Figure (tube, rainbow, N blue to C red):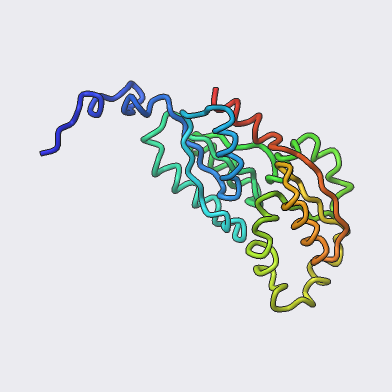
Length: 215
């Protein structure tokens, strides 16, 4: 028979084991994993745990809400606080409504391009940059897997004009200074036939939001 220590068996008023009562679970898009881990390490947020959902859910935004709900319900008995590190991400407000129903909070903003740059700053020029195509560090690294191949450009290059004919430039929102990523982003722009702009954003509102959550 396994022995159970008093610490394992005793629960707090929240119904959690004491070692979990002060911990925070971040349920996040896999595309943000590298950045969240970097922020955790830089800020010493050892009381935060991270669970990532597949980044490829963005190829089917209608599946994000269900995946987040399942993850929250599966882990909510273990943590006093769960925070969802997704923006709206094409769910048309459904993710926000689901988070309200579940009693958890989430990152503000329409998508990661907005919160990386800062939602207020992004909104200021959104009306003048509707012909811009955005990439983050993650999307530059995974350009073939998340853009080139899913859009069929590897098999049918003629689709380029159909898909990107109305775009004028590629904006690379850099989270860190990395010459190799900059060079790869330039190559992505050339492959798409777009002008290129590198815009250093750092972690933007993602950093400020997680600092508030960390307490």
